[in-house]
Length: 274
View 1 (cartoon, helix red, strand yellow):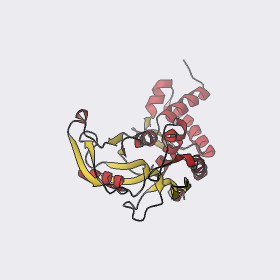
View 2 (cartoon, helix red, strand yellow):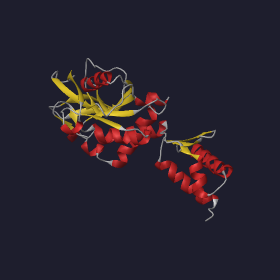
View 3 (cartoon, helix red, strand yellow):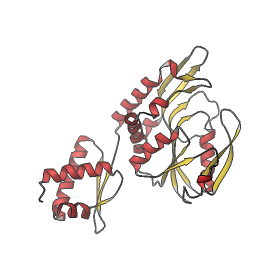
View 4 (cartoon, one colour):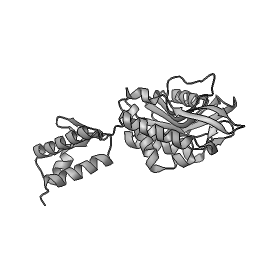
């Protein structure tokens, strides 16, 4: 069967969208369509120019015998600002305030469409880092980490606070919670993360940063390098934060639990888009 160029372009575009940050050899499309490599290269150039013109992401091509094409999703600053404004609007509902100055966010992290957008935003900020895995803490951070990892085409590493027999041999550390000042434990299976990996830490909420600081210490046990830390919401009501270098999408401040009042504003992540 001979395919028209328009048919080839539709198929290739769909395939690249389903395989973000994955190098697809040109020979895959050459063999699939039974077409000359030069024709496939011309098709990809059309896709590349369209994506650039419409700001749909980045199409990268690699020359040589092992060359191919890679689709890199990218969120531009206008889209990022619009998404953060939407998050602030959703989070400012006063019924969301929970005891201890936390926010109810289960509906947000359970919204696939919204979470995919958040994942693309966070992934865009760290797209140029040499990453091997996205790391998070069970349980609410898992959905967010999966959304980020899907865009980056990386595995998700989940740290737990209890040891399970199904995890096999594990590494555990004790850490001090930044908000409660209690000593807690976090555990990670030795098989989950290779030594010397480069990781991105993702979580849904951060107060003083005790848990994330614990994750960083646990990563040291694996000789891993933390390339970034990103949270969906950070609390501004903290005098001494244990983490300095991080990005946040939304910032929670002016918390008054008695009157059920608080403020939400954009976090610091938009600085990464300049």
